[in-house]
Image (cartoon, rainbow, N blue to C red; front, side, top):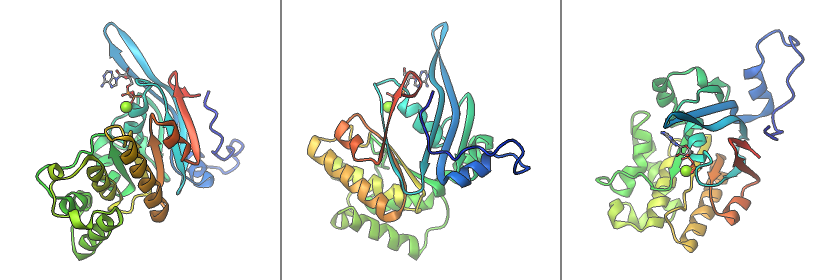
Length: 250
Ligand code: ADP
Ligand code: MG
């Protein structure tokens, strides 16, 4: 069973006279929450039960790290929390919104304003320079005007790349590419950043710098951070540390 203890106690049955799930989220202060997430994959003639009832929540502005062996389902979980993939069953709340009731199309329409993602492989658009990659975060959710351009400029400056704004990804180091990705993730002032092994392709010193930056900018922007990492030192920098094991949080 999950030992997650942040969710407010459920009201006694019927005490509020309405279904309680959404109210629970609001009362617990969770900005992102899942309950009982299950996910299986076909594996030959058997099924692989990757997530076996994952309860998770992160509060507004909180930092949480998730560790677990390779193949333990960390990316599967993050993709489901991000609405990029669907669980077989279970609930997912983005703020008060019951995201598990939305179609993948509806999730896509809402994702860009609610959360930002950072991946191990950066996923920058190779044809666009650093500035345009950051701005792409805004372009995906609506019109780009002077305000968005100013924010992209400010974010690039904040991540230390003011002098690199016209560089293409191929003209940036790994650490610089990940800084661009961090700026892009923050573009729409998301409530949550989900980072999946963001230092996996970086050397140790550069990785330490990127994690330091990620924690700082999330704090400044009051975004919650969910950090999947293999690095114990990085995991310890989060306010709360979780271990995914046998399909659940140990
Ligand atoms: P982690 O990120 O912790 O390394 P993943 O979430 O990527 O783990 O994968 C968990 C398990 O699910 C692995 O055994 C992986 O092979 C399997 N898996 C992931 N995605 C798929 C898929 N699309 N089809 C079948 N199996 C998958
Ligand atoms: Mg993974």
